Amino acid sequence: MGVRMLFAILVFAAALAVIASERADRTKVALVGAVLVVLTQTIDQEHAIEAIDWETIGLLAGMMLIVRVTEPTGIYTYLAIRAGQVARGRPLAVVMSLALSTAVLSAFLDNLTTILLMVPITFLLADALDIDPIPLILIEVIASNIGGTATLIGDPPNILIAGATGLSFGDFIANLAPISLLAFVVVTGMLYLVFRKRLQIAPEARDRVLELDARKSIEDEAELKRTLPVLVITILAFFVHKALGVEPATVALTGATVMLLLTRQSVEEALRGIEWPTLFFFVGLFVMVGALEERGAIQEVADAIGSLTGGDRTAELLGITWISAIGSGIVDNIPFTATMIPVVEELQGGARDDAYWWALSLGACFGGNFTLVAAAANVAAAGMAERAGRPIGFIEFLKVGVPATLLSMLLATGYIAVRYV
Amino acid sequence: MSPQRIASTVRREVWLLRDEDTVRHAVQKIIDVDVPALPVVDATGTLRGIFGEREFIGALFPGYVTQLGYAGFVPRSLERVLEKRPICAHEPVGKYMNTDHIDVDEDHSDTQLAEIFLHHRVLIVPIVGGGRVTGIVTREDFFRALARRFLELS
Image (cartoon, rainbow over all chains, first blue to last red; front, side, top):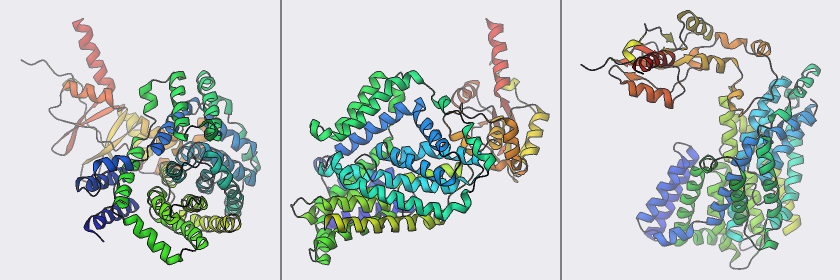
């Protein structure tokens, strides 16, 4: 092992450790790591820039802009309130309705945004229903990570995989939506059984939810009429992007640009919706992984996995799935996926076998439910709950996250075995 | 001779809250003293934060209300809020105070105060000297003093 490879590994491992410990901002850590590997010529600047996946950055930026422009219209609040109202105060229906809305929104927006939109409304609904909001919020977080698995744009690991492989939106839906739907039904059902005693709703409280005037949540109807068609067309365009011959990032950025033209928001206001720390986190991450690749560390890992599995395809597929789930639970599914992508490429040895990518996606996305720090949406929900005066502890999350992850992973294992082996 | 600073005309006698005072005690004191907010200090007299009208509303209404971008669809009345949140009356102000440290030292300028009132949504600015709160400037008093001088000159 060369000195530079060792340095690339040390920088990356240290960055992962600090990110997992949450002792420093993850964007700062990733940028420091990137600067260190470039300054020491572990990867030169030209290759560092090449290592940045601009498809991923463009897709994320475009979707962030689209969400930012449409969010002030109140459309997402409207959907969340209606989801609570259609259940008419019946506990199982409340759980299923909120979980399904969260899963569907997560599939077409992103997990983090969905949770930021759903959690305050869930607190409001739980307050009206006189029940503990935490079971509902935990179920939503888990539904969000499962729902996001279904599409190319639903969860950052999928965006990363699409950026690296060119797999289409339709490929993701065809391969991941069936297992996501199954996992959603089974896991949400299990969580309802676990929490049902805390979700008993008094008859007089049921009507209180209906007092909420969902139509009043639409804050700017004119803006909604201008931007909603663009949102719908953008989502539809994702389904046919391959036939149109354009990349997902082009679809997202086109939608975002059309929205910028139509909205009454100023460009400055709309651009504030871009989570620059997240984008810079990705940039730093790509450069660090680029250094690992450049110095041969990724090849070493792939060789080690290959020798462990003896090149057996089934063992590799299931190994990738479970290692990704556990790894994502410990570090964060974004850096983990970014690291695993070149490893999976090496394992395939030049022969394209998409089953490997679905194994990685299922492990990384479902693994996002493992711990409180496994996905950004989990951390955001905990932060919002704490600010609302009802914090979610690490152990409290673990008690739900571990069984939910194990159950969904068992389903994923069966799915991979049946469909791809 | 330098002109009299506006701030020097608006200092008040300092009333302080302790971080362990209850919300009920704090609200009563704010009403009695007739200021929009009061500085909160710890047992050593060090400034820890501010508790006032905004913080009281935050304590009274459920925490998630601040996270709702808009609440025009919630028909809830104050009676129901008071019915559901009576406990906050007995909680310490330290739990609800604003801990953003926006204070000035003794030789602050009018421009510094203007900048604070423009950039921060604070109702009072504590004046701190020697580690202790020696006065406060309320936004209302600052505005009135400013307006008086402006009208005199124009």
